[in-house]
Image (cartoon, rainbow, N blue to C red; front, side, top):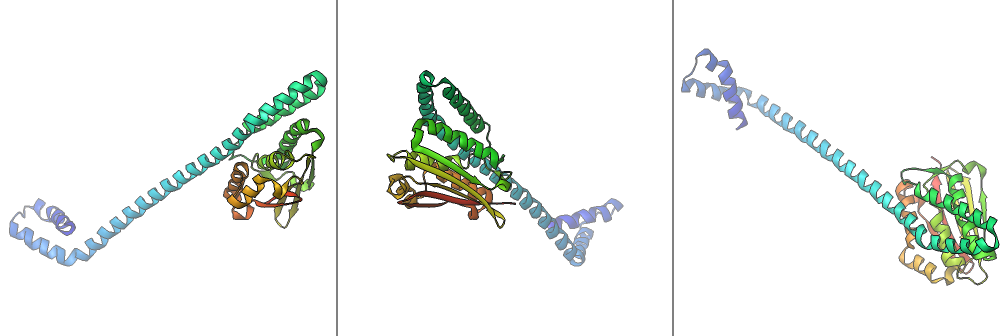
Length: 272
């Protein structure tokens, strides 16, 4: 069909417009044309088809990549929203109860707790997963969170931070530490009669920043931690694990370890 069409077009311009209009002339021209120029037409035709399919494939590939980026962003936003929603209900309820009790006995402490609570929620509400924050900001947020929890648990909860100073400017995903310390408070130290402590250790070594969040709570004796090791992770830890792996690859996944001495979470983030 391609040869027939193109041959007729060439005949029209080469002969028909010059008053050569007999059917025999057209047949003769078409036979000669297909014999001498077939290879050239064949080459032109497949070149055109090849270019068309390359352009079409490129456009589809770009559209697919765009859709994947949109889906990835939506998934990250959903994960961060899940973390935010975990903070809001029970944490707010317990904190307001603590503030209510403090108002009658220690107004200054109640005022400090309200200030910390506002900072915690401002940080959470202003956080977006495509945005990164400095490690110093993330640690301040975590410190405010734990300080509020300490008012509730009093001497049953203590925490320490051991951080290399040259790590403080590292950019990290917002709210990456909070689900981990919350897991320690809720399932390790909270149910333990004598309470316990949480140590946050952050060190730089050989192109990575290493994070260790350890508590001396119930550890392997906590039913929750057993479920984490056997079934994967709790919701908060699972979301943190997914966020880290998507941003930095499998090398940054969470490593969990529970024993009688407590519970540990380790991960690393590349400096670059």
